[in-house]
Length: 98
Image: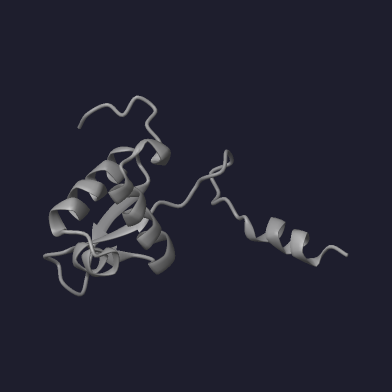
């Protein structure tokens, strides 16, 4: 693996950003499903997933419906205490304040 030197999503090519958004909106997907949703070529999606995995944004799991494929998902942000970061309460407070 190559060093990312602090690379973030903003530094990635547009295709990787699109794949990130597809995963963000549609949840865990296989590479084939990402190709269908994004309308990118399979090769471009593979490259984008590789870049996203390199910087630790996307996680690859086993797809139990077909073990020949992998399931890709966005990694959950982790708070300093080790728990998942929950942004829902802040949104709730902002929308319900009178």
